[in-house]
Length: 310
Figure 1 (cartoon, helix red, strand yellow):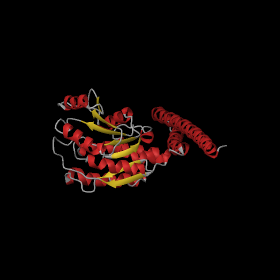
Figure 2 (cartoon, helix red, strand yellow; figure 1 turned 90 degrees about the horizontal axis):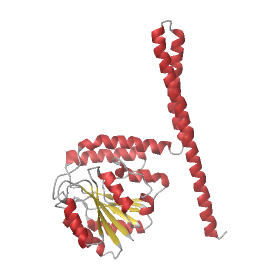
Figure 3 (cartoon, helix red, strand yellow; figure 1 turned 120 degrees about the vertical axis):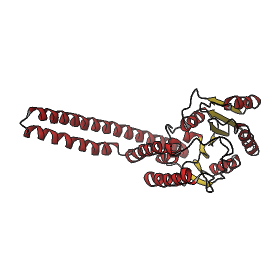
């Protein structure tokens, strides 16, 4: 199958039918073998019955249903796992992303890119609660991860299936996919896409998601910084714990009172054990990384020999 269009849905009963019709209209003219996956994230309205009725009339549409609301990223991950297409396109289900942009994204993948990210250059959202926080977040993500994407939060993206299916997604990680795949040296393009004001229902986003994004950003930064040198990173933290432990043991030797001495002794044992554990974790991480590198080098050598006929 050439293409899968993945759409997470949550309480979008008014948008389902016009969204389906718009996707079919846009993708039909591409002449590709395609499918549409509607992933319902525990909707409480008529989203599922309407989507199921559409699927009964069109074998290209499949509906994946969650028992409860898990969030956009798990819904998107479920769609990716269940997709059969060689190219996967993700988009929001509120009609703010325009299906007419799908051919442009797919053509960009055809130019040799692994990921194509939509950029809502004329965004139709509220200034205070959506635009300003988004600009700050995008700037911060670019600075911290080193992958300068203008609009990480845009759900309209295209991926090569063999790339995106290897990326673990959880929490709000869908917005960090370009940064996460940068470890594998993926080719990323960013294109301007249309953005429409919400026509139906209420926005599912707000300022309450900022703390989740911030926590995920710390996680991504840790992964990016420690990926190639896990032992060094763990050793730095272990040295801090070791210094605290040694200081506590010195305090034990200088105190005459048994009660404070016992407290410092416990602190010394705790932090010394933590330092040893961190070093062991770092060593394990280093072994995993080195082993993975050897396998990659061996695989690359095999591919090289195959191409040269050796």
